[in-house]
Length: 323
Image (tube, rainbow, N blue to C red; front, side, top):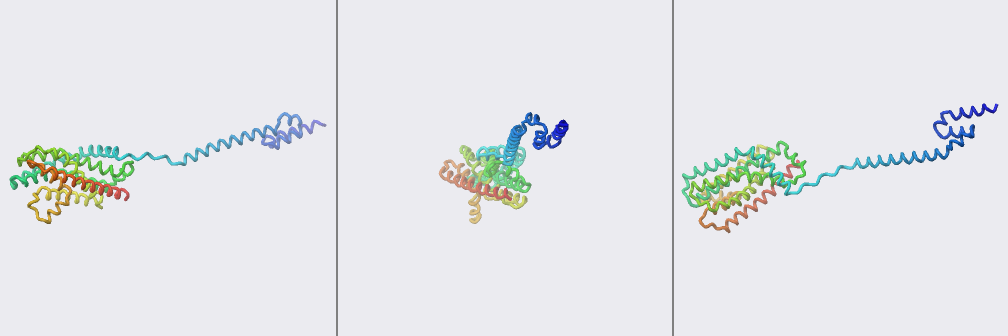
């Protein structure tokens, strides 16, 4: 008769509560004393509970830290410095200009040589011949640096190409200065050939043609800054092309024609053109004994105009990039 309560106690142990949690174990200990001593349920369950809880909390803490780290934005790359970025833009623009602008450079050179041949029948020599040769030489710079650069930036703005430069860690001044330097340096062969041909046509001395090393970069920077500003400020691509063409025409009329034959009002407009001072410096170098102080003064004015025009072009680039 005493066996039945034990069996019923065992059946209580084999129930679901006993397998699931602590209440089943305590019921077994009431029916079977040996089972309670063998199991050691309170101590084991406490240890296992603490271990499970601590393990779970450790895993959840690690996953929380990983989630918080994943929510943080990735650090951005450092912004490129001005000089390395300028060199990179210069190389890219120069390689592009070699492919796309070589035919136009020949056109600019032949145009200037043709103008000198036409003026050969009108001008005999002297100061007027020096003005014609100097103006025709700088006209090559105006054709490329002012006209073509205005068209390039106008096309870049109209096609959305400024967005590409905006995504790069490149300062705006590096974009403008790199493009201006590439277009200005691209005019060196044509300007040198025009100056040599003009000296031969008008029988001018070529001993001081080394002044082109200063005239080309300074005039090119001034005209390139003006062309970039016109191209970036023009609301439409067609207007940018028109402004570039008008600027080149002004450099042609006010630079090639002798200043002594111009009306007084036109001479004032000539003084406002950036290329005028480069023309004057080159024309004075054809003298037998040039006044180098005046030549340096003309180059200094040209350099000042270059700084102002490039600053205006940089401002125009920032203004166009945010729109």
